View (cartoon, rainbow, N blue to C red):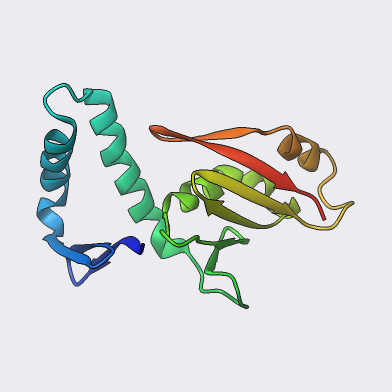
Length: 154
């Protein structure tokens, strides 16, 4: 199912399957808070709500930095790290890539799928210690979520 959030002409456009919702950007934060209150009820943790708002703002800052794909089947690149979306096009992969920026020299591409991040390394011999650090990584915190990490060496 397609899932995306994008800014179009001053509006935030949310697509979820066949549902397409356009929200004025000036009201997006207030509407997001209202939705969280409805979904999670009055017991929602204030820290969780803040983390959700920060996550949306973080993604919004990263999107303009994404470069178009320079070859198929990639969806784009950020900080020189190519990436592929899965079917839900979860933009949190951009936050994961930002966290991996120090390792960019050793990463060929990343792919998010079902809450796990696949990190595909470049050929052996590139990155040395960096590859060791990446191979030992088993999870990554993305705001209020934790993704498992699988590292694949070529």
